[in-house]
Length: 216
Length: 276
Picture 1 (cartoon, chains in turn brown, purple):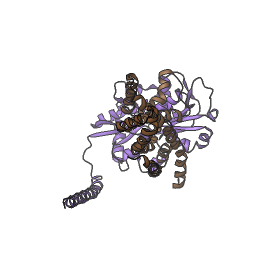
Picture 2 (tube, helix red, strand yellow):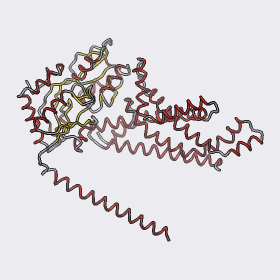
Picture 3 (cartoon, rainbow over the protein chains, first blue to last red):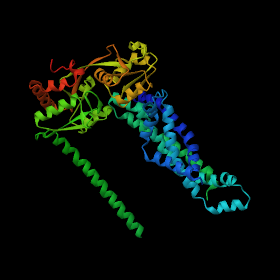
Picture 4 (cartoon, chains in turn brown, cyan):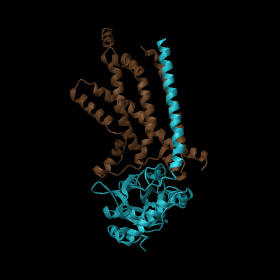
């Protein structure tokens, strides 16, 4: 197999890697905010439930969660395993990453000085207005570096979908490496991930610049 | 001033470390190359590399210890030769790399002899088992031949001879499937089949038979898709080790130990080659 065919074959799996990546971000970013809100809620049981969820999702391996989401329903309730593996994979990734994002959001929200809330109140802002117009934009600016960190990890974690036989790029790389007894596919995979992350870092850098208005 | 001194010290430490590392690198390689040929001092232990999810040849027994036909035979061989018996569970799609890196002394786990292994210089023992690749399907499915699986999803374990076949001699057949799903173990292939995510599993006959014996609701499509043989793989240059193991195998066949072990695995008995 020439290098070119190898790269082309692996690039065909890149589509699935990207699907995991973008869908996970799409669901995990807002879901994380919802969980962060629950966590910061004044109603004790709500905040306790959110705290428990976060501790379980952060305290168990993503690989285990992938297997649990994909095969758990079959073993527990006899529900058939999804033919389209993208569904359980994205669910598992989304809830896992939502837990991490939630904690990042919470850190950002809690870092805002109380004085700003008080000032907003004096100026006649409602609580919702204060949060959406004053606090949130600054929070987003503040947490961007941590979020970028998490997103970069997500790019690399997509390779874990192999555990549930989802044929993403790294799985295809492993197949080629095995049939060709060659190390090259792993190098190619490394380059793919690296370039992917370069793009992510570049885009996130741009976003950070855009948001610099809210920097304190 | 202080900063400068610190910088110089750090630079010196880094330089020293890198020199040291380079030195190590240079040192170990000739040592290895000289050590290999004269390694002869009597072997005291023998590590067999197995796929830990490959019943009935090698699997984790109910008592939490690795067992299976291959494991028991290897244990008997080690006893015969006075070696300490050790097991190392390999990552099947990296088994030969792990063998080369000395993590185990052989790969002995229902391993199909492939020409590519011999070409790559591995020492392969005499074949000891006649194997066949089959398709395992659900008992209540309507599939009766590989042709019925056109447009269906088929699972196979990564790094197995079945996977090589689907990429090689059986490429035409594989192309009729809607998808070939590669998993990292047959256990997950079977879960995919049982859970309805795939329609068939392409697997070695004894493994399929073992699964049917332990689980209801599955059957094998009666169609020979590829005959092959199992052997034991050793590193290139380990001819002597291979000969020792083969000698011990002959010895335990002669004293009846081998037959006693084989009796425990009635499903595979008919295909054993060494006792024919």
